[in-house]
Amino acid sequence: MNTAEFIETYYTERNNTNSLKVDALQERYGDAGLLPLWVADTEFSVPETVKNVLSERIAHGIFGYSTVPVDYFKAYDGWQKRHAGTQFQAEWLHFSTGVVQALYDLIDCFTEEGDAVLVQPPVYYPFYHAISDKKRSLVTNPLILNDGIYQIDFADFETKIRDNKVKLFILCSPHNPVGRVWQREELEKVLAICEKYQVLVIADEIHSDLILSNQQFTSAITAASNLKSLIVCNAPSKTFNMATLLNAHIWIPSKNNREIFAEWSSRNKQTENSSLGQLAAKTAYQTGDEWLQAFLGVIEENYHYVKDRLQTEIPEIFVGELQGTYLLWLDLSQWIPKEKVKYYIQDKAQLAIDYGEWFSEDCKSCIRINLATSPKNIKIAVDRLIVVDQLKKGVDNHDKI
Ligand SMILES: Cc1ncc(COP(=O)(O)O)c(C=O)c1O
Image (cartoon, rainbow, N blue to C red; front, side, top):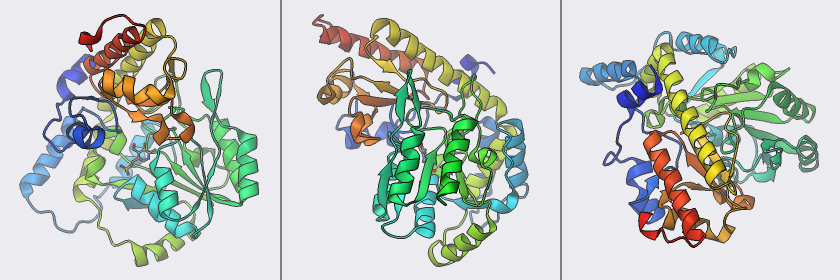
């Protein structure tokens, strides 16, 4: 399936489906007419095979208590063998309704109030919410921009861990919003520092399937020399656009940590598994390879379109290098003042994006745009930025916006 066939088959309008991205624009941005390029889900429906299996299940009409589908792990393991090659083991697997819920649970289970938790800004903002909601203390190791690529400041990472007696590190891999796919050596270095200071690592690998063609994803499981202090969260939800089917994975390799989590869960976690979510995930892992390849083709085309056109037409905008995820990070600091980002991007260009300040106080000049939509929408967004640029330069193109 090429990208044109994929778009033809799977692109789906989402208006009037209670879609957060599309139908909540008035509530979230105060303007229902914006082009929605925010929040991390997509306008592409799940693979046909998944739709069919869910339709059959829905026609059956009973949604009582369920067990995990037979061969769920085998389907996941097969997916891994064909994709990143990470060696998971079935006994490590726990389910959650979502990765964010898993982070809240794991913070609760493995740390105490007041404990220091480290993250790497700019980073997915629910990490901050989980840390503050659970009354843990936030420690940051900001990423640094070197030669146009975001990188880890390893010296600062170690200093912050040592000086703040950090108990837990939440790794975002691939990294949302800067789109980095961490190299094995980078992961080895941070994991070794965490081992040295006995820091538990939760690797949020929800974007691990969304890797652009010149990149290779390495799981923290593969890079770690010791799995005793590592927990990995991932899910089929970003990959296949099924966040509200409420099925995510928590992989706990250490037996001791599994026992601690089981004891904590018996006191705090009485949720059922999502039968539809697990059925959808199992089917997607068994049959979704071609769908994913075509979907990634769309992301890659949209990325190059934005990068190439902005580089030519508005070179003052810095377009981050997208290695993984479908979320593109733009730095507007050389183009417009940070106080004017909302004015130009939302009020004038009529785009609903994620504001950089949501990911870090220091990123008020940045925005994140979601590329997982039709090339037509992406072209509209870039056209509008170019008209705004002309407006800014005093050319009267106001009525074109
Ligand atoms: C890094 C990261 N973790 C977690 C999530 C959300 O996961 P869930 O919907 O399973 O809570 C997202 C969504 O964008 C994300 O980017």
